[in-house]
Image 1 (cartoon, rainbow, N blue to C red):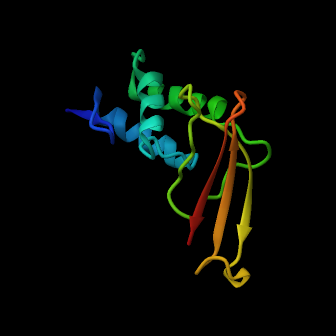
Image 2: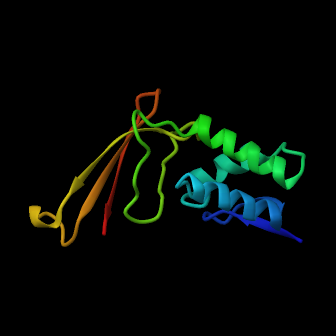
Length: 133
């Protein structure tokens, strides 16, 4: 059985056997990466896997190795308060995680605890993601 990868913007880029899709999601979850978190992230993974030929076990190793090499953090990876939302830069590559600032509810800014996640790309782009628990 195969599934069609239908992107959030409506494009259909590829199909993937269900076992491979489950492996992709399993490995992503292990690294707190959601391959479906955004259209850019979906496109990144579709490009990554488009030329892969091999078994499911080899696929898991392939995805795991690419996540390790492509998703960089200055120190520790983000500790997401909600679903993982790692951004990609304009070239479609995952940005580098710089750091996280936790703002507690008692700061009076948000109704609950919040986290700011700062990302950078070598092209000079920056992105801050805010999650409120």
